[in-house]
Picture 1 (cartoon, one colour):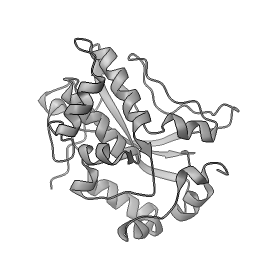
Picture 2 (cartoon, one colour):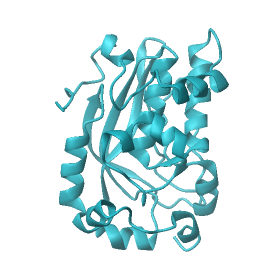
Picture 3 (spheres, helix red, strand yellow):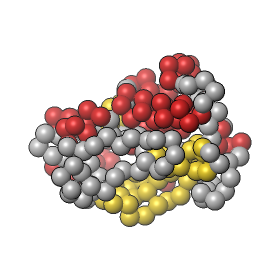
Picture 4 (cartoon, rainbow, N blue to C red):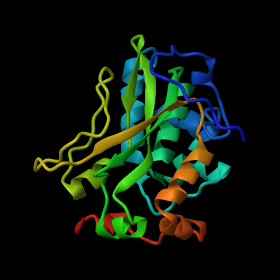
Length: 232
């Protein structure tokens, strides 16, 4: 599979930003049913907010069950499973937005102070999360960046305010938690893509945390992120 081209925010949307791909399977019945539940007819802004919130809260964040295959990373697969990590959830949102006629791209960045637990940090062997996923969507003649990663239940467990999207401003993860402690810092942006650059993500992940990738190749890292969240 050929890796997609890196795009920039200055490039206006084109037909690829509404396209269907092996991963962004916007035509799938699961995605279409999701759209029917959350779309606000005739209002792209309200629809974008509704879809963002639904992906954020209806799909549980889970960093321990990741399947780097075409089937495992499809938007419809993640939606059907009801769980996924940041990239998988971004793929779902991109597919839903495109299905609603809203141009969308996938974005990736390396970040530190990502929401994590002691066990996850131990398994990863680093506090750097490579290729953290977000979405760029085109509304009111400009690109807006959003990340629907952490659902409300998980935020409550960690003492973090859920990240809301108002349909006008970027909604990337805020830098501080409710106690004023540093929460997340973006280190490097890898740009925007019209499809999932899965080969790049796997290569970067193998280099950054080989131990965790070895666990995933055997079927998962075997943790319960929600049970761990209480002790952080």
